[in-house]
Length: 291
Image (tube, rainbow, N blue to C red; front, side):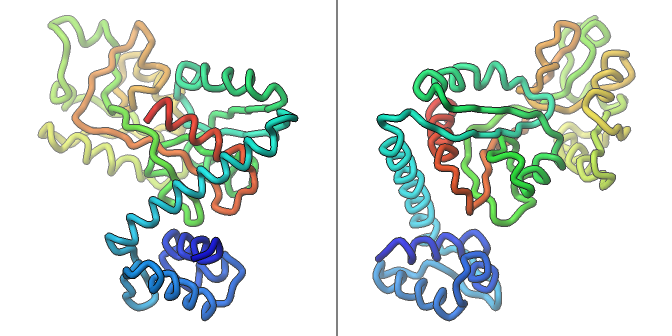
């Protein structure tokens, strides 16, 4: 078993297709196939189920994928620390995060601890809407995406690591809804639900309807072009918004957050081919603190 075999295995696992994996890894498809077959022979297990052009991991393959990914991250972290042990030199890390998230509370200590250990390190953070997060990652304008799982699943060639889960809920104007006690989700069945439609696809509307199904109603949806527009409408008492517990407006004293029985998975995502080793170190630290 060698590093090349492991790299090829990870490529196929992430692309779910030998041709695409070969193209991305700059290797011929026959060589890639032989590499994976040799790895399977050495490990004594079948790593992939092959169905036509598509492949998927077997249960054993999933175990080895997780193991090799953790090993790869650990190797990068050790290598990174070894190279910078005496110089404390670091490159820049640009983090894109979900627009509206109160990340100052979430990442403040982490960023400052890194600055103490590596004073030359420059961590830049930028709030982006869903579409911008992926576009800027594609254009190498950010190194790391801090967002929800559904966003990162829209792109191939992105490595992902789970961080935590957060609660979704309904955000409403407090003085409008607390006159007779704290409301529950089904109390909002006649309300207008504001939904962001950044790319004109109205995709989030389907998700909102799914969130409301367990409470026995179909929401009345009003599409807006930004989170700020939605919040302004909620503050004016014109309707409500489904968001998550990390949204900064949840902490507004004028507003009330009503938890629902549904959650987001928060993920870190970065390009598979990134050469910025500092990204791996930062990912490991975030997982330690928030996992």
